[in-house]
Length: 437
Image 1: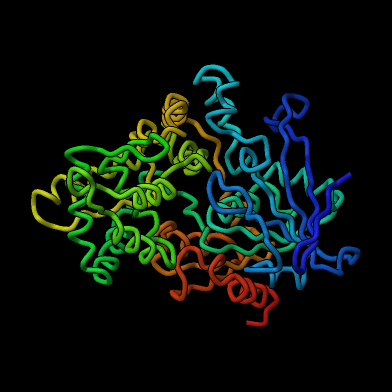
Image 2 (image 1 turned 90 degrees about the vertical axis):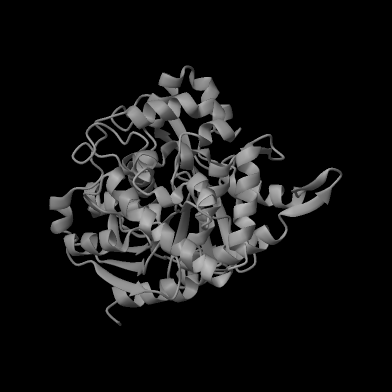
């Protein structure tokens, strides 16, 4: 029997599904996929349309609701919501350094992980839809960030399962290679750095001091991870979120204390850094990140650590040069570098499998441009102006390539607009889909 729980304003029900690891071998190895059904309290027996939520990532589990809050507050007015833990995340047969060790060699681990991209996630969702709604039932899809990438794959592979789709910050470039993605991303990250230092000019010297210290002597984090200059620059991930610049500034304020032998990086700072940089809670984000761009028609030889290669075209991200030339040290953004698989204890056991995935070529295409050009599913998308994570130009080009897709371009929020102001964002998209706007 499914387990049901009551929280403020909502009723949740656990759903577990046994699904094929490889959808080309439906009778082969099975994995467990978990989803949480959420309905407004008092409406448990109502005949409500379903809304499937696909979380950002890759490798991100669905949010754990505490009640009728954020975008759920609006969604539950009209829908019965299904929060899917995408395969490998949360309660869905997790893929981590602990569980992947049971798969055997790095090659066997990489072969297993090759089944954890958007195409497999969509096929999982389709099997779940049929079991919950019946063969002819259709549901609404809400995709945030990587969930939006999955939405485009859904429209390419199985549009018959959708009655409408909402996307927030997740219109991927249909024909963008991994190199294309990062070549467009680095200049956006530069702009986010410039905005941060304009807001907090005192942070220029703070960051330079920390970078110089780490360049001479990397520091151990509480979990045993190694804080190098390059790892420290990874805190720039914060700069793509609405409050991220402020969070980073407050971390830097408490970076130093006077220890027994003079100034040293504080435990408070190192604990905060670890919380931001460790991939222990979501290793698939790092392991699978570049593979989400892999398509045989655009990257036939594989992604090959594209962020690392393209970084060489942007010397302004060299901390060594910045220190030598007395200029600000720039943070990086949503880039995964092979060095992270040496410095992060949660990733270190997966470094060989990650290398094999980076070398893997001939990834199946994720998007069917011809089918998207004939799309009949109503699709509306919020595009966040100068989004650090998803290129606005790519998003608008994709919007033009998907028949009937309507966009709302806004600079009111950053990439996390759905989380920060979910009720307003989702309400706008729903009204757009209904033709009210």
